[in-house]
Image (cartoon, rainbow over all chains, first blue to last red; front, side, top):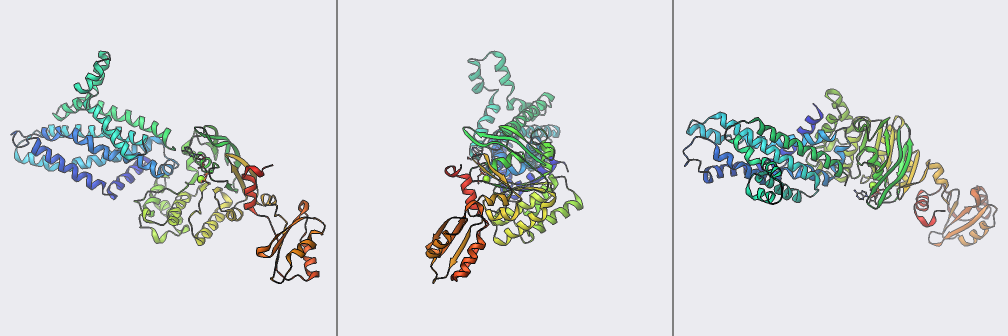
Amino acid sequence: MSVVGVILSRELKSYFATPLAYVFSVIFLALTGAFTFYLGGFFERGQADLAPFFSFHPWLYLFLIPAISMRIWAEERQSGRIELLMTLPVTMGQAVIGKFLAAWIFTAVALALTFPIWLTVNYLGDPDNGVVLTGYLGSLLMAGAFLAIGSCISAANKNQVIAFIVTIAICFVFLLSGFPLVLDFFSAWAPQGIVDLVSGLSFLSHFDSLSKGVIDIRDVVYFLAVITAWLFANAIVLELKKAD
Amino acid sequence: MIKAETLTKRYGAITAVDELSFTVQQGEVLGFLGPNGAGKTTTMRMLAGFVQPTSGQAEMCGFSVEREPTQAKRCIGYLPEGAPCYDEMTPRDFLGFVASIRGLTGAEKRSRTDNAIDRLNLGSVLNQPVGTLSKGFKRRVGFAQAILHDPPVLILDEPTDGLDPNQKHEVRNLINAMSDDKIIIISTHILEEVAALCNRIIIVSEGKIATDETPDTLIRRSRYHNAVTLQFEPTGQPDQAAAMIGQLAGIDHVETDAATRSITAFPANNALIVTAIADMAREENWPLEQLHLEAGRLDEVFRSVTTPETVQ
Ligand SMILES: Nc1ncnc2c1ncn2[C@@H]1O[C@H](COP(=O)(O)OP(=O)(O)OP(=O)(O)O)[C@@H](O)[C@H]1O
Ligand SMILES: [Mg+2]
C-alpha cells in the first residue's frame, strides 16, 4: 500500500474507533430526513425527485463538516502526535492528502447512508435517477470543498473550538458569495471584475445546477480547484506551524 | 554518520539552540545532557527533521535533513519527548501502522514487529488501547516504534523517563546491545545512565555546547576525582584524623561531615593519595566503617559546567 493509503486507512479506522462516526451519521441522517420531509414538503410537492433533499445539504454541511474537519490537524498538533507523523518518512503532501481523503470517504459513507430516501422516492414515483446521481455527486464535491477549507483552518489552530468557528465563518462566506449579503459588501468599493469573481466563487450557485441534474464540467472543475487550493494552503500552513 | 553544522534555532527573542556543531560516528552512543530548557529537545527535533533550523544544517547518513528529508528520515528511529501516540490504537495496530509507513510488508513486517514487541516486553498489553496504558508502557511503545525498522541512527529523547527500575535496566541492555553498529543519541537527566550507556557526552547549556568528551575524561573534572573518603565508626575521632591527614604530602584540603562521621581528603593536582591515607589508617588503627577512592561525581561536574557562577 502507498504511504497515502496507509495514512488514509489508519485515519478511517480511527473515525470508527471513536463515537464520532456514529454520532455524525445518525445526526446527519436524522437532519436530512427531517428537513426533507417536513420543511422541504417532500410529499406535498407531488414530484418524484430529491430537490428538497439536496437543497438542505449546503446548510447541514455548514455546521456538520466543520465538526469533522476541526480535529484533522488541531488534535494532531495539540497531542504532539504530529511530531511522530512528521518524523516518519512521509511528505507533507502525503499526510495532508491521506487525512483529507479519509475525512472525505467518511463523509461519502454518511451520504451513502441516506439511500433510504432515494428508495422512497423510487417507490413512490418514477424519478430521473440520473438527476439523483448527479445531485449526490454535487453534494459530495461540495462536502469535499468544505472539508478542504476545514482541514486548512484546523492546521492553523491548535484549538479545535476556534477551528470549528472559523471554518463555519469561512464556509458561510463561500456559500453565500453569490448573494447580495456578501456581494453588497464588495460592490460598495471593489471594481465590477472583483464582484463578478466573488460571485463566481459561490458554492451554492455551483451546487445548484449539479443538484438539478446538470453536469457542467465547469462546476466539477470548480469544486476540485477549490479543494486543491485549500489543501495546498493546508500543507503550507502546516509546514510553518507544525512545531509551534 | 550524523553531522550538525552550526545548527541554530530561534523562537522570537529566545535562542533555543545556538550554533551547535558536532559529528557522531557509527558505534558512538552520545549522551545529550543539559539543564531544563538547554535546547536538547530542539536539537533532536532539528536532527529528526521536525523543526526547521533558523540557520545551519544537519546531515543524516549522507542525506541533508532539509533537502532530502524523506531519505534522511528513513535512516532514523526517533522517540519524541513524551512519546506521543495514537491513543485509540492498540500497540499492535500502531506498530503495524508505523511498519507499513516504513514500507515493510508481509513476513518481514511481521518479524520486525514481533521482534520490537519482544525486545520491549509489550506482549501483555498488545491489544489494549495505548491511551489506557501506564506511562512506562506508553514510553515502551514509542521506543518499539523507533527501533522497528532497525535504523542505523537512533535519536531518543528521554527514553527511560517513567520506566520502573527493571525496565530501565532492560532498556539500557537493549541500547547496549544495539550500540555497536548504530549511532545512538540519548538525552536524559539521569546521570548514572549516561555513565552506564554512553561513550561520549555533550553537555549543552543555553543552546551552546559546554563540554564534549568521554565520560572518563568528564568525570576527571570533578573535584572529587581521586579524593578519598573515610567513614568512621561511632567510636572514631574524625576531626583528629582530618588534622593528621591534612599534614600528609599531596593533600589539598580535608572536609569533614559530622552527620555521617566521614571526612573527605582532596588531593592537590590530582595526586594519588589513597595509599598514604590507607597506610596511616592502618598504623593509627582508626575504627573505620569504610574507606574509598572517589572516581568523581558527574552531578557535581554537571552543576559546575552548567551554572554560570562557577564557569571559569
Ligand atoms: N515551540 C516553541 N516556541 C517557543 N519557544 C520554544 C519552543 N520550543 C522550545 N522553546 C524554547 O526553547 C528552549 C529550549 O527548549 P528545549 O525543549 O529544547 O529544552 P530541553 O533541553 O529539551 O529541556 P528539558 O530538559 O526540560 O526537556 C526553551 O527555552 C523553550 O522554552
Ligand atoms: Mg527536552
